[in-house]
Image (cartoon, rainbow, N blue to C red; front, side, top):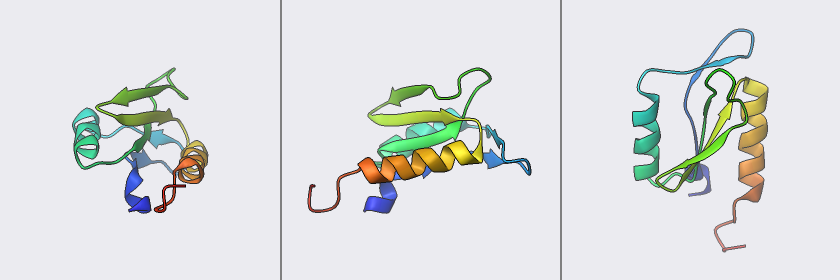
Amino acid sequence: EGDRRLVAIGEGGLAGELRRVPGLERRIAEAARLGFDTAIVPAERGCEGRRRSVKGLRVVEVGTLNHALFEALTAREAAPDSSGH
């Protein structure tokens, strides 16, 4: 279950940049419906680092693959384990 808590949605470029994909908001809504806790998505121009919530899903906008990996590792470390700790 711990691996299902985080979803990443986007397209990576060769230079490490992340790009938005068609239907992003629909995909975010579907992730929330499926029970994910956090979604990492490519940032809109000027919105890198923005955090918002959609139907209980924390959405983090990032601009690079490095930033996405940092957020993913941070979210995983902060998530409680299956024993509730």
